[in-house]
Each structure stands twice: as C-alpha cells, then as structure tokens.
Image (tube, rainbow, N blue to C red; front, side):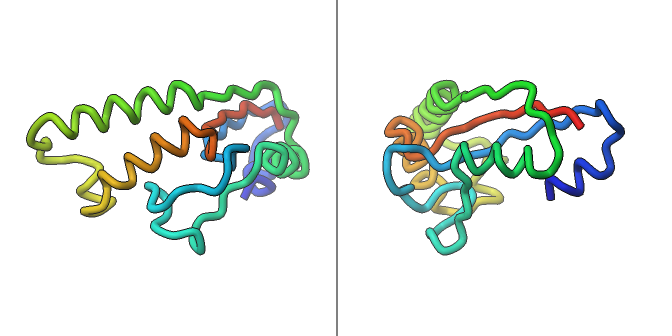
Length: 124
C-alpha cells in the first residue's frame, strides 16, 4: 500500500500516516476496535512501520507518538459512556454491542503500552 502511495505522489509530495502499532507492554488485549481476536489483528512495530515507509521510498520527516493523548481520549469516552444513555449515533452503531469492552481494552492497552498510536509525516 505504501509503495503505491509513493508511486502516485509527485516528488516532494507529502504523505501522512496515523496508525496503531504494537507496543512494548505485552500482548494486545482483545477485542479492540480493529479486531475482535488476534488472528485478524496485524499491527506493525514502530521499527517495522519505519522500514515499510522507508522501503516504499519515503523520507520520514517527523514521527509523533500520541499514545498518552489517545489514552486520555479513550478514558474520557469510556467515562461519558458510563454516565448515561448513549446518543443515537455512536461507535457502537458500526462496531457492535461489544464496543464498551473494546473501549476498556483500548484504554488498558494504551496505558500499559501494549499498543502505541503514532503519526508519520513523509515526503516522496
């Protein structure tokens, strides 16, 4: 996918990636918003992600680890969900009835650094 993005960008074009990556804190707890079980979860390590982007021909200009901010956001969302009726359109609408468990696991995975949220800005 990254090679194709690089192919279609003009030289000097910018490409941004935000992704959930494997952290150093142990195995990911499931379910999570992108996978209900490990067999369908394919997260890269930070080193593998950098290798994928560089291997596709990108120059990595910046790397921002937003794990702490993501944890705070998911904690706040879990708190709001526990305090009253859900609004008519929520993540549950497209993620299913186990979304609250996904949210709890996402918070724990972030806090325990089982996962990391990282953004990359790259140049073609």
